[in-house]
Length: 184
Figure 1 (tube, rainbow, N blue to C red):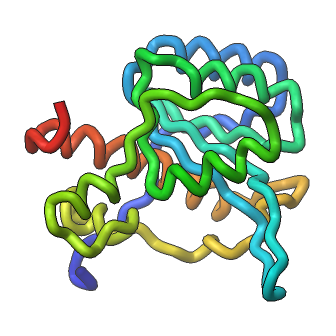
Figure 2 (figure 1 turned 90 degrees about the vertical axis):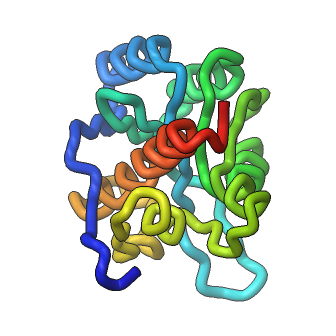
Figure 3 (figure 1 turned 180 degrees about the vertical axis):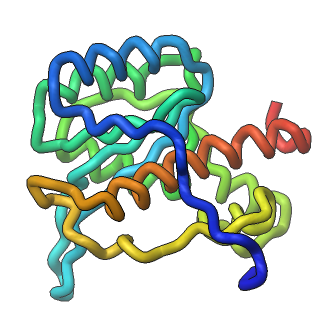
């Protein structure tokens, strides 16, 4: 695994901060049948303390959209995407992400797909995103900004790249699984 090349998402990233950004994201999401999905949460370094998600990342074929959850006007678009039956939402550890996200806003989630559960069903013990990317996609994803402050008013370029890469890799995993016949 250590010999695999490191890859980061290099396409367009849209940090959804304006009505125009939101309209663009919504239009793109309506055209998709598969999106990568992930959330980021501010880390808690004290036992028993936890925080709610601060950011939702959604990867389409054209871009990755980052939705800062301090902006409540984003909630209806995210809820609509999560409830869309024709869109497969792909993410690692979805059950936990969705459970915590429901503490931020209400939604119904359908057509969710966790590549880790498929890997475990096929006998792979390595079911995290980084391991699955190495096994199925042939590259490593850097972990650098995993424990950074996702609640910051301004995300750093490194945080933006990290967040976009996770959502993008989830979508890529699903597409690879489909190619391999692991999903229909």
